[in-house]
Image 1 (cartoon, rainbow, N blue to C red):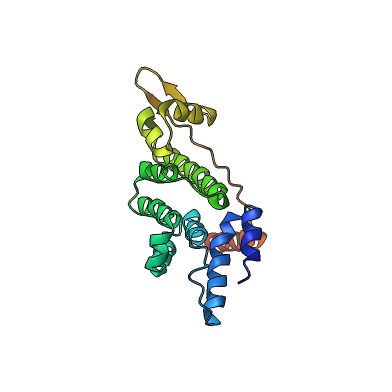
Image 2 (cartoon, rainbow, N blue to C red; image 1 turned 90 degrees about the vertical axis):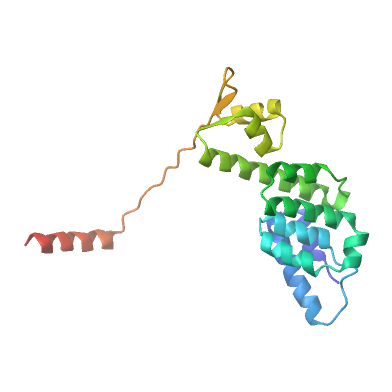
Length: 197
């Protein structure tokens, strides 16, 4: 089996491409009738889907993994625990699952990258959902202790009220430039002219 595309993607930290590379490679090998289950990088493949927040694909991959692999590869099971926490929206559990296993050197950077991506996603979720939020809840969502969470959000421009232990969320202003298509402007002009006369 030629895993060169996969190893290149991991080496270049192109983690968003890993799930697709693994899916294509698995289909290619399976179509050739080659037994691949014992050598397949299930941990990387499963984490590739979780990295993209494609929980349905991760679930189906998990169901297709042979029981013998699940029993003999605790890293695969630990990655699936992350997926389970995401599935049940147990935000603190995601971080506990990440920290609760001693990851192999091959996948350690990939897991760390997922953790950073997940923290950013949770931060963006908090920004869009809240105008004020407690320090304790923020720390829970970001998988940090209260001091780390305070430092993190203050760097993002939030403010803290020490008396109430609440953050005031600073919303990012989204500037969209609306472009006017000359043909649409011409049609609108003709339409208004037609209405007036």
